[in-house]
Image (cartoon, rainbow over the protein chains, first blue to last red):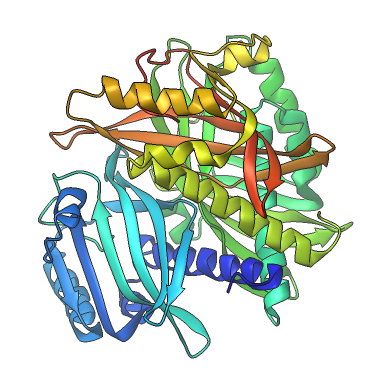
Length: 162
Length: 162
Length: 162
């Protein structure tokens, strides 16, 4: 990775595709596809920049392992008795931080807009994905995806994955 | 396409360049360059996510063939008697969905900010481009670009292409 | 550059990485790393689209040479006696305009969200980076980065680099 131009172009392309597919699954309301972006043993959290900086392990959302990620989808489907708002992820350019034995470290900024049923739009969240990636069956998967929101005011009723 | 890392990196780069160039032509007010992003036989529509989901064919904007795309530019130039607002497209990461005989299917999210003459900015539109791409004379062109807006409240006086 | 698919994919990847790293250095408050994205002889300005169109050379921020870029960081650190707001750059897709003897011309749109201490978020700035890039010690660096803001209402007390 990074040794040759070929690898650089190809890895960059794979990162773009992974992040684009992930956001699309959520925004298209295909939540059942969402767990498949993670490895079996995985960590998914939503936390604030302040908490992340202080090393606090727990976020407002916490899933340890793919089964817990799937449980979250089930819970969201059950809870969603009201007509949904929709969301639009605009994911920025991914940065490759480096590769260790644990996997590939990357960070990617995001912005999410919420669209109300009456057509109003507002900025819902901004932040960055702090990721640890592994290759599994020829595809990049998240071993860790820490969703670090810039604002401390995270809606604890967060209806959707970020 | 997609068979080798080389092709993956190169195609991803071409998609990034196409989407960046398209947005730049509009935001720079070079509308006369805009039709050249399409193939001679093409479809360009602006519609809402609700309409798109229900398979309604007509959007608030509809152009069937490059000549109609050009007509739209002429109409916009004639109508634009007031000092323009400006717009900023922020295009997210393109996702490659697959290739068929008809061409290459991709989807790309977008966000458009409107900037008023007095400096105020607001979120104007979010959504996704649902594209069918063909290679023509060595460059990627839109056979179809369906602009699917997240909000149902689409300004029918839309001053600019999205 | 651009002659082979290999070069295209690799250059695109390098541009994505450069822009992602640049934004991350600012948003992570690692301002001391920011000058290293520039070549020794360089130009960094923040200006408005109107001023840029009229060819006015001076922006609200102007740094001619890496030493002035460093000075700006020192000034910012000294001035920053109040608890900072934070910012989130969402950088769009980079467009490659061409290569001359002077370097590589690219343009990249951006959007910056400001996050207040109480959690409120607002659109702070949108615009485009008009860049001239050189390769230095194997890495792309900015010979020129003209930050062209869409709005004329640029905060002259701009707390952060854009």
